[in-house]
Image (tube, rainbow, N blue to C red; front, side, top):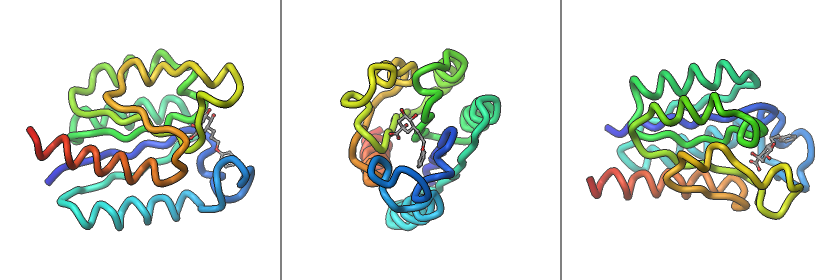
Length: 146
Ligand code: CA2
């Protein structure tokens, strides 16, 4: 059984409640259900987390170092600021997919740089919630090749 941690950073708990023109109208619970249902089709165990705290996000990455084969991470605003999250991800040996719901390459300049991308094996952006599904599919593909 492949263990995948799906980690979501600050303000993503507001999905579906604010800024639907950027992030769509589905909630974080819809996203969790979407990922769970998709994972059921493959031999995948999902651990889905959202936190507004940088330290909690780092602790979740530490848990993943112990228990996960792959991480899907949307670090939200910490993407653009956090060397600590990059350091934690650098300690993880499995496959890392960075996901962003919006296309950060086409938004404000301050969103164009990502610390997470330095470690990520794959970056998916601008695909809405489907980016998470594409990330799961890629992990299935990668882990079945090895
Ligand atoms: O596009 C993404 O997924 C982001 O990671 C989302 C972050 C943003 O800081 C990144 O630059 C790009 C923001 C998450 C805030 O999420 C909200 C969702 C709904 C309503 C308000 C905020």
